[in-house]
Amino acid sequence: MLLAMLLPAGPTRAQVLQADSTGHDSIRISLLTCAAGQEIYSLFGHTAIRYENYTRGIDRVYNYGIFDFDTPNFVLRFALGETDYQLGVSSYQRFAAEYAYWGRDVWQQALDLRQAEKELLVKLLDENYRPENRVYRYNFFYDNCSTRPRDMVERAIAGHMDYGQDMDDRATGITFRDILRKYSEGHPWSGFAMDFCMGPKADKQISRRTQMFVPFNLQADFSHAYIHDEAENIRPLVEEETKIVETKALNSRDWTDMLTPMRSAWLLFIVVVCATLLGIKLGKSFWGMDLLLFAAAGLAGCILAFLALFSTHPAVSPNYLLFVFHPLHLLCLPIMLPWVRKKRVSLYMAVNFAVLTFFIALWPVIPQRFDLAVLPLALCLLARSGANLWTAYKRHKRPKRITTLR
Image (tube, rainbow, N blue to C red; front, side, top):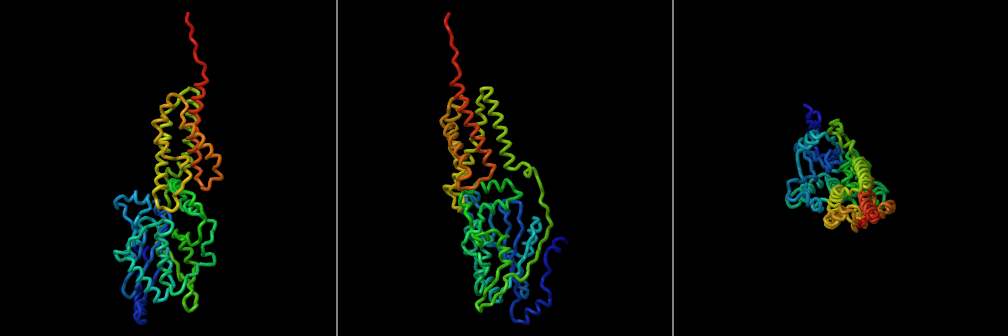
């Protein structure tokens, strides 16, 4: 019953008769924009194209967001930027039921296209759905489930699309990182992970057209767009906009809302500083803490180095966080730890202390924006490197016990 209420009614008999009397199929093409989900890959929403043919009883959805987690080496290929998505086609009822089940609303924008434009768009979509054409190399910023429907609609227009005077290559003051942070609000750990992997290329200002990689931006731009046809007539692209799936879902809150990356990082910093001060007072090295901290920083550095060196993602290389988190932390542990345990000056700790000092001092002028949670994490490593130098210095300055022979 609930699903029946969510789905729109089918074509009326009058609509079908009207379509038959004109000698043409009664076709409606709509852009569907789906609300964000809870998973990291669904935080930005989704876009699809709905094709309704009242005469033939067709109601299907073309979806460029199909991927398979079970694909061999899916995670590795995704990290390398070699993920293949494909165009999928399903009935509208199935599509709407799925989004209703997951509590994600869906908006429909019926497009004011001429009969020939509708037929051409359907032809282009069907051609793209052929087995040899449906798979494409996915790029989150430039070629995704939002940009592909836009490009298809533009190709079918007999004329050109007018999104406004500022739809060119000029910078808008908005960056990829701004958009990532905006749509990851309420999901702090997912937002931190994305921000952590993005390098300075994510901080370059992008054009309004480039921002259409986000489905909600495409929806907004479509609602204000006009079609200039070959006869110099102008008409709005969208003739009607409605919400066709409304779930009234509420966002659930869990422990991650309290234990954010920022709070977790500062809590770790407090623990590390207190333990470090206690170790200095007691003359202990607490090398086990160095083992955990530098191993974790080294593992994070391996991820950053892998993305920077091998990934084709457009905004992950270079990354200045490699001055803080890098594979050497992990590789040099066997050499560094024995010196720390013996309370002797570790050359690695000395170099790391200098690098981190410069990184923190130059933070405001580094051409990359960092999540503020990085600061306490860098300070943790700085504190442990400084503790080694101070402990070794105190040990060296300690007066030697003199024994005399009697």
